[in-house]
View: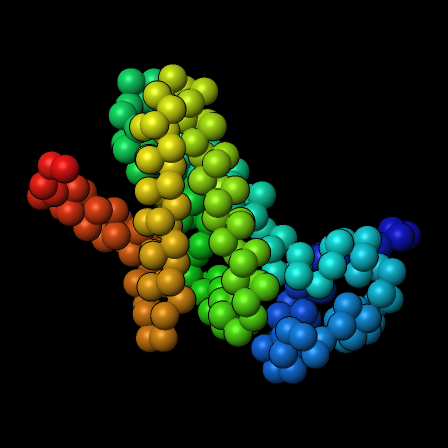
Length: 192
């Protein structure tokens, strides 16, 4: 018999999100999260370093999805074409069935300044990783930094729209719309 049942981390995440949404992040403890799914606090801490990490556990797969998009770009692709592929690949990480959970998670984050800060840090880390990967492909430092940070901004705007009340479009469609708007703005920009 297995010592831990498969899916324990996912069960803890679902329980935590529900408790955070109903009781509030600050008023929910790791012990309460664990007990709500019949586990111990010790089991909780085998999976997560603290209750905040329950909300940010998926950042490595998301970064991997972005990097997979970069790796799929042809070697001669421009920095913007490469990050467009990264955005498309990252968008695939958010199928329609994840939207209700993403909306609930975002509502919890929006109510807590410390979680908002952690979310910003996550996005900054994603931008840094993306820029490093672009540099490794031979993209110049400034171009890699601008392209990566632009991609993160496009992603963030698209995500906010995707989790918005009443939004039904796919994440891929929203990312494409925001990216097209970026290109339109850049094409009509005046020189400094």
